[in-house]
Image 1 (cartoon, rainbow, N blue to C red):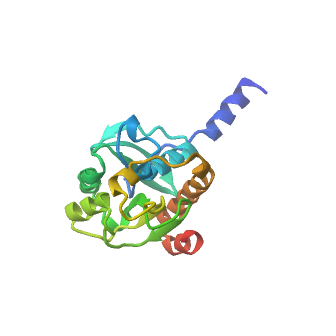
Image 2: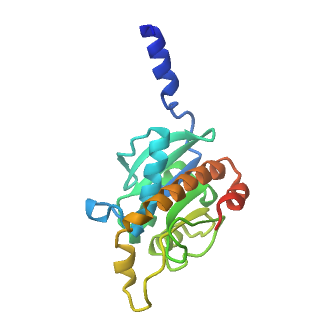
Image 3: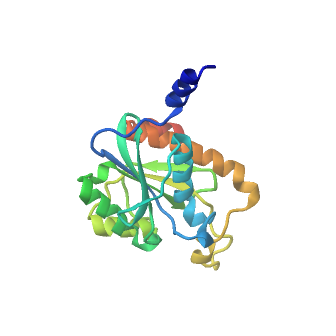
Length: 209
């Protein structure tokens, strides 16, 4: 293979540079810091990492109180976010980005953990209440809207009613759950692509548990 052929091959593998104005926000919720890596509450961050791996992105630019990057997904320029505000203040980061790019709630996709779903299960919704999730509660409160699409990632219920919810969501997944979690995150990335393409019904029909 000639040097020119090598350069052409590398060029074809390179992720296209984002073009035009940001049209969509994709935000995974979680808590910053190594002590929270791999916890149930951070499945949103983990899903963003899976998305970035697929698109060969480096989500490290500090902007809007978040680690960010942007990419062309389904033909649209998307801002990808991992808020550094800690979960309960997620709305500060999300609404700052929404205001800057003038992105409506309907084009602000949030990915987060859900204790009502078993690990590996997804539930996609076009809109809805906070369901007791503090990150979503913050976004709804500060944006004044619950009209944003979301992908709920199953993390499993507390082992018994008296178990501390905070301890549960800040606890780590079991090693034997790795395979189903990886499959769920891959499915979530596929759902993101459909939702950005305006095909949320297709995403719900295909991936909802």
